[in-house]
Each structure stands twice: as structure tokens, then as C-alpha cells.
Image (cartoon, rainbow, N blue to C red; front, side, top):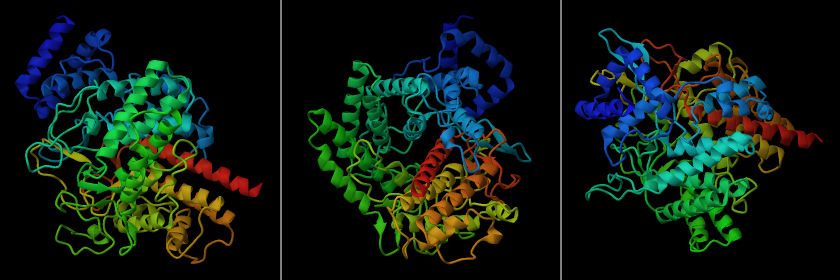
Length: 604
């Protein structure tokens, strides 16, 4: 039949099925060739980013559109077929090579990330759709990858910032920035159909499109229940849009649109700054370091550019900078001696207290909470994303830069709270690998897998079902490299608070059998910086050991401990080809390159 008839039939059928995804999965598996033929027939009139169905709040039509685009648009194309991949692998990223990654490796990682970046500006979190099986169990059930085939505000914005950090100025990168800004201008110009935003309890909350979590590939808002609002997204993307104004290649209309969107986003961020929001792991309502540190940096940059360009109606921007700085400062807990991720936490049920004891075998909500608590790698990631740099807002320094002793002691407790409990780390230690793997937080409940059929009993539930994450481990390595830069430049010195972290970071360059032989730090800043770089290399090497031969990286590295019976410890699990996994690695390698330059400057 004609394309219009096929599309209409799909929408009608979608409504009739009420989008029972178990049935959809079965249909896709049994009618693979028919669906492939359907995609071929529709492909001339169905480009990535087009809207197949009405966007007027109809969940079925939105999901039908997403499914069609899923079938049509995503494949891991070769370098010649992906212009962004070709640009990123043409040698311009060779400065990132070093440690366990060669220049060719860097190109592969960049291309794996580029496969999730579409020409219309969309950046999907992963090509995983929920039907990909990880392991089959007797009786017909299986654990599958989760469905991440959406554009999350957070993941997409961080990926764009990474792309601009490592490859700004390239023709395809500039084109991608233009498409991304245009897409967000379109998305943010429409009201959200959702009304279920926090705070809850007195009826539906008020929702803004700026605080929306994620979008379908066609640009429409995800309109099902989710943790809303998530107010790091507008701050991250305001920082991305500021790059449009500094790019020098944008046309006047694009510049005006970017300016308007930045102002709108930062007014929202400032106006909502004192309120709670959902955390980056989408499980907890409260005030979070990750969110507030990024909001502070975005506001500092916004106040700077507004002053320099004489923007009107933004007199509150410079007033919000110290307000957000104060909120960030409140995350330092002098009693427990760590920077806690969440303040004003309303409950411990959906997400545990993240204490040292939360990783104990059999830990649950009733387990005695051994301090420190609120340990979360999101603190490290927030600090890395909130660095001042040398451009906009650089006069406003970070509250807790990555090399701050309070950040480093937090990183030390994070590693100690998780790494020793992962079977995969013991296996890697026995194999003589350097480095260490970490996850998001002690007691993490999210295994990264879903059951198929959906009504099957969960293979793992409760505390410590989660495993090590690539992005968390890469983030740890980046903190080590950032510390090496600070030591080389004289911006930090060893003290009683950071001592254990520095010793551990240097030891991660070595196999476990060779660690712990000295309690003394090197006598010179240069030697300490070099040993820290080697420690970061060890951390990246261990994570790389669990990637595929062509450096594809999923969300998680299975911890073992029989949490997912039948899966081998060290195997990749969760959503495959997670965009954030690749971006976090490129960020770490960029920090490594900075560290090498800083040490070289000491020598000269």
C-alpha cells in the first residue's frame, strides 16, 4: 500500500494494542523481514527527525513515530558513511592518544559516539530498545537491555560539550552544533503536555518544557510518567548554546534564537534554584550537588556573557550566582568528611542512603548506616562538568574543583565503598590488571536490565544489584588527571585530607600485588604529577579491558557476585553503546592531554 496508508495503519494498530511492548517485541522478532521491507518502502519519505504521527499529546502516535524511526535510522555506520565520524577519526584527535589508548583507538571511540549523533541534532542515549537479550533463563524468560532509544537532555548536552571540548572548529562539529541548537529551539518553543512534576501531594505539579527529561527521536516530548522536573538539563544546554554565540559561524537568526533560549533557560534555572529536583540517576527528589554545581557554572557563564553583550532584562543573573554558590557549599559535610550528593532528601525507599555500609552483603533499608553517607560518583561528575576553564565565567571559580582536598577525600571513600565488593575487581586483580572499577554509589539498586516477559520475577532486586559503570570509572580517571594538572601548576599540595587518595591513585598504576608498599608521597611535584597520570592510565586500562575489541562500550560492566546468574563477571551489560560512556572517556583523555602538557611545561 501507499506510505500514508501504512502509516495510518500503524497508528491505528498502535492504539488498538495500547502499545503493549511485549507484543511489539514479539512481533518485531517474528516479522523481522516484513518490518525491514516496510522500512525500505517508507525510507524515501521518512528522514531521521521527521514526525510520522501527530504530536498533540497522543502517546500511541508518539511511540509509533519513535518505532518507525528506530527501524529506519539507526545503524553503526562505517566512517565513510558518517561524516562526523570521518572528521573525528581524521587525526585531529591524536593529541588525546596516550596511556592505554592509541590514536586509532581514539578514532574508534569517537566514531562509536558519533553513531548515536544524528544530523538533525538528535543525540540518543543508546541504540538499545529493550528487545536485545543479555541472557536467557529456563522457562523462556530473559534479561534484556533497557530501552534508551530517546534523547535525554542531560546526556545529549554533556555529549555536545564533550564534542566541542575535543573537536571544536571542525566543519562537521560546527554543523552539528547548529543542528543541535536549532532542534532545541524547536523543542523549547512548545509547551509540555505533562503535568506530573514535583513537588507532589496537592494535585498535579507545574511542569515546564525546560525541565523535561527526555524526548522521542522525532523531537516530541516523552509523555509518560517519569521523574520530573530535572533541572540540570536546561543549565547544561544553556552552556552548549553559549558556544553558538562564540562560534563566529552562526547566522544572525541562529544567534538570536540561541540568545533567547539561553535567557529563558537561565531564568528558569535561577527561578527554580531553591527548589528540589530529580537527581541525575532519576530516582530521588531533593537538592543535588551534580545539579547545583552545574547550575552555578551555567549561571556564572550566563552573567558574564549578558554583561559583555549588554543583554536586557537579566539583572538577576549576577544575583543568582552567589545564591547557587551557597547551595553548592552546603553539600560539604564537615562531620562525615565528604561532599554529599543529596541534601533535603525526603525518603530512603527508592534509593538507599549511599553509606559505606550500604554495600555490605545483604544490606537493605534497615541496615545500620555507617558514615559517611550520600556517597555518589555524581559528585565527581558534577565537579568535572562545572570547571571554570578560561572562557565565559572564568572569574567565578568553582566551589569544589576536582583537585580540592574535600573532593579527593570524597573520591577515596567512594572507591572504598564500592570497589572491594565487586567480584570483577577481584578477578581483575588476580589477573594482574592495574586500576579499579567503580559504579555510581554504594548500594546501587539499578541492575541496568529488564525482564522479558515483563511480569517475570526480577533476577535481582534491592540493594547492590548494580555493577561497575564505564562512565563512573572514566570519571574517576578524569579526576586523577585533573589532580595531576593542579599539582603540576602549583594549584594544590598534599595534605592530611587528600593523602590517602593520592597514595591510592598512584597505586592504581600497578597490579594489586605491587600496591601499598609506601606511605610516603614523591618528593617533587613533577614526580607526583607523573605518578598520578600513570594511576589514571591504570584506571582507564582496566575499563578498556572490558570493552569489545572495537571499543564498543555499554552502560555497565557486570560485577559478578551472582547478582545476574548465568552472566560472566566482567561482561558488558545494560544498554549497549551508551553515548555517555564514550563521551566520559574522551573527556578523561582530554584531561590526560592537559596533564601531559602541564608536566612538560614543568620540565621546560
